[in-house]
Image (cartoon, rainbow, N blue to C red; front, side, top):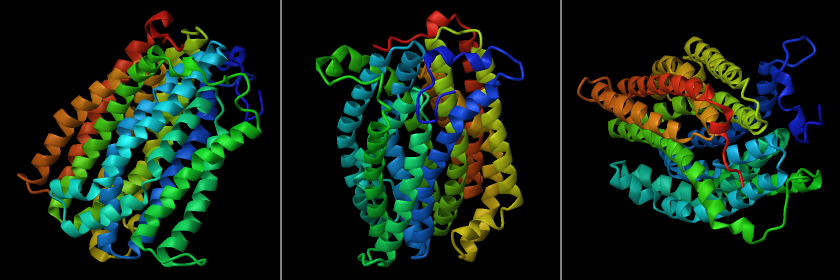
Length: 471
């Protein structure tokens, strides 16, 4: 096998699945080797949010609630644009499987262009955080604090989009570890900046909540710069780079990219906004409930990064197989990926249930918040397995160039099942925040079942039907 910072040659991509012999890696090991570095990178990404949450919690409950609602707003507003950038997945992975390095390079150039342009309206949405939250019925004091946090975090809009473009390009070519190391370095950078800018250490000004947003914004500019420098220094663009020219801006190529990317963005936006609506409903109940919700959603989001890594890795694996015209092992790869995503979340669900009274105290010691969070953790554990299955299913559909399925399923699962049930349980039936969590859990369960069936049926189709035009 090649060194970890170099791509796996297309000629070797199908070998792991072609033999069950002891000397050949299993499909599990193949997907694991692709997914593990990405899962660590995703955990690193979430750790930034955890650091913000834990440090801001020391300031006060109102500030914690503001970070909760602001983070949810940031994710829901950026998910469409980040998903569009991820339309690169089948373009690069299938091109790499086919040995077409120039097509991979074109996908990167168009991805960087789309990431940059898409950041402009995203920053506009972030500037309107306070008025938007007031319009949605949130507490005025919390909305004002959230506005302060998001304005300071503004550089993240372009920085993280560019990081995603570079990460997906490298991942599609089976180069996984650079993004992991850069993200780990970014986390250390973020911790230092948070400590300094929130509390006024290391000669930095004491900015409180604003400092938390500024630290995250600066870190998200560091990430793409560091990954670009790493890739240039170690020759990771070799064999899949080209000069910028008129083909980089080809309207037809950009249209094909957007045709794949927009459904991915819509899928992510539908999911993110479902949880944002859930957050808004919790905000109608009270600040204590919102703070407890943030603690639990933060932990659930943290563990979600594990199957998300599997999702990205399995998307790469499926795309590589399709590009290499190896349709024989698609269903085997899909089943293995589903088992990995659901299995890892079953373990985290067990942790949530067993340690439900301990985990919230990592964030804060406010008795009312800790007690309510402890009652929500078993429900969060209940939907962990479904969450793992559905995110892997979305990745597999991206790798097969069928991203519309994820958008359709999310629309049905969250907006026909999950949110209506959450509202009924929370308000007419009087279950409050507990009812909101059970409704979201039901929605995730529906999404998981529908995606599993759709993926396995799609994987059984002839390989020619799954190939995308990656030029």
